[in-house]
Length: 197
Length: 212
Image (cartoon, rainbow over all chains, first blue to last red; front, side, top):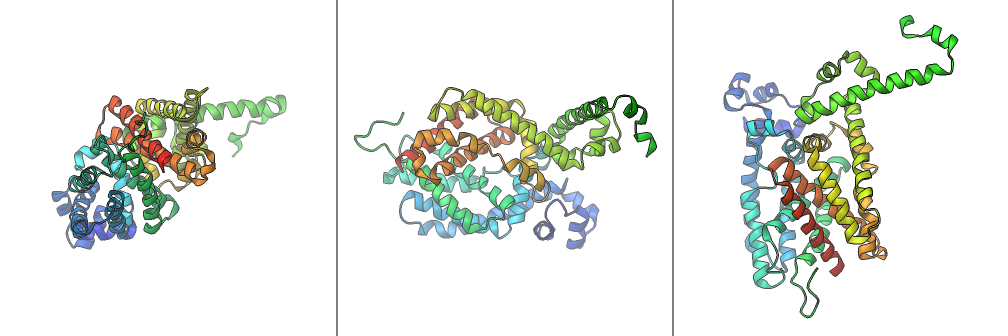
């Protein structure tokens, strides 16, 4: 059933796909969809959870091979993330849109929180912590906040895919540049240079 | 169609008629917008129907459709007014300031305003992210992005000769602002934490750009 839902959300979009369509595609009754899920948003939430597992597998495959500066390592992780989500772009855009919806609706569907993806957050945080040890990230940096800033910029770039039809290459190039600027800000103050105000 | 025309008025008060009608039309629009704003904030874009909006405004759905072509048209008008008021508040806050002080003041003003109507902000954001749902709204709102407002101050801070860099930085600051605000709206961050984070992240971005 989740496979059927994922395919439909991708083909016709989340808004247009109905519970009835999902049931028909999965070959089950509408009633049986509702015994497992409280709403269409709930189905989306479960589809997204399943996708996250696949994303972790992709990220863990590249993690041991990361080389270069901390900024470059982060670039690689996020490039994997972009490539992954662009394979099912409509689905991810639908998720961002629904994740903004009104609190009551969200509470009832238990949608995974956008940007609070424990293993992904952990992976980026580790990458930054290694940077502190390596010396190209300041020890004074609030790592959680830095992860937030990176993830926020990452997700906001999708608005270019939603409104402008940008492809993953354009988003990766944009984010590479953003990471470059952010990591300049994350660097330890240069020896002899006045401390940052 | 005869009962829709006001022949008598036309004959006796030719100059008055358009303004009277325009005023009545304006009042109707305001009534609809007021009701719609509350309902969008309460139920989101998808959850508020034209029927509910008409009922809350005390008129027929036909009367709503006489003023707005569809829900996305009505929604866009609300979002545009919100945007114009937000920009005015940001400009007023930055009055007499330059560079990073102006940027901080504008973001602070935007935060105050957005935190004061988080539900509506959330509804607007959700609609703008939905592919195809509010294409027209997106096009109309994207013409005057808030990032353009802080661009001049960013140029003062990092130098305008940096070409596309200032624009890129202004967008980055505004995107970072919206991302943090989204967390306030959806995931629950306290207002003080939101303000502190926005201040810190803006500082980090500017510091990075100055070094680069």
